[in-house]
Length: 490
Ligand SMILES: *[C@@H]1O[C@H](CO)[C@@H](O)[C@H](O)[C@H]1NC(C)=O
Ligand SMILES: *[C@@H]1O[C@H](CO)[C@@H](O)[C@H](O)[C@H]1NC(C)=O
Image (cartoon, rainbow, N blue to C red; front, top):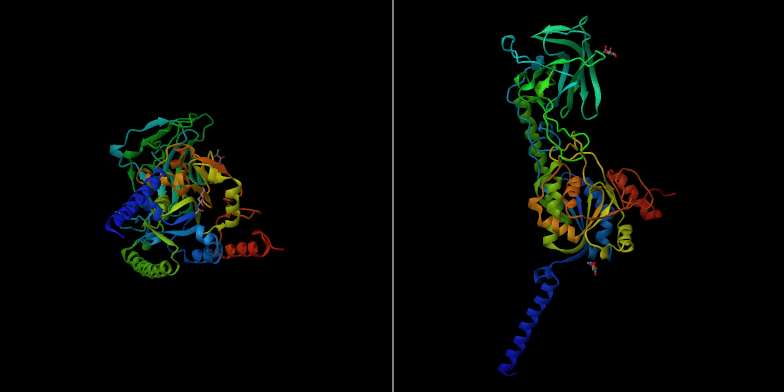
């Protein structure tokens, strides 16, 4: 071939590849995208580092089924989403079970009985104020304490007297209740009145309220003291006074933060429970033990990553409060690394019936829709301020609709929006409510379906079922294989 013909062929090849890029670009794809593997569904299973047994059970059931299925194995990618780092603080030494913060006390612990809140001294009494009850003081427990007495601030019990109650704020339940009357005012100690109660251990993480109310039928004014002028004896951080978020009663939104505990009228005495647990030596012992455990865990996890290739390690410490970050990292990874139509998010204790889901995607014509969010939704869910689901940051009284964690499907357009905005999205208390808050801005197309089962139990035809022990999961799966129904095999 003559040289100019070679030139023409070369030119044609070059222009062809230019054309190809142009066509791909007009379709919103780049040749980089073109090179990415393509899947119909990418499944992300949130899994904690230490959940080896759960992952094993899933690989022995529905995950293994997908990975070995001739069609699914090509079209569906399954990833366990696992945190890249463990929490180095031994669980008993953490501030709470949901974060990786260590409880650090600012003083060494003695075993004696102490007054939680007291009037500093008789010659510099804080200026009291009279207000109607009930007057509440909120606190949380960072290390277990034993309540020994309940008390009233100030020396005088007048009129019909008052009642002091210790309330479990999360359960909204009275634990202890004592009446102080002028006939039976209790013991005068340090300018306050006290009465002994049955010793009661408040566990770590307990959130409590001390309430005082008048025993008189018409609400008599109570003598209260400004909280910030009282002497707080919290043994270096064993107890903590907490703020409460107040809501305007009827408005529904426009919440405001109020510190409703500015004044208080009651107190209590306590002892630190098992103070030896907090000693340096015992902390060091636990730390050593824990670090040994983590070393073994790391090795085992590395072997698992290599052996199965289905673990996606995402940047971050493995604790409950990081779940929103983990799920965002997953969406980001998916968007950057594969072409896909849908993601399915689930947890490592969930059963998933992939055949049903795959069929239903076609029946519901989900491919023809945009901004698809297919799950079962909770709506009008009140924001909880206590415990595992305790929300510190979201200031509206109800959450926007959010999907149940056991299974929810997002279309690629929603996922790439999340991926693009990862750094602007603020994490709330859990991954499910966070997703609800983030996506509310986009007006997602909620497709609600009760076959996504959100609570424990078994219903015929369910797509998912949560909170299963590995053995329960195996049973559901073997029922489904043998009899075509997960719930029973007769
Ligand atoms: C993604 O969906 C499109 C239709 O919207 C379909 O043509 C394509 O095959 C799907 N991708 C995979 C990998 O199944
Ligand atoms: C306190 O007083 C109230 C009202 O008189 C009464 O109902 C309640 O039983 C009393 N509680 C105790 C512990 O004595």
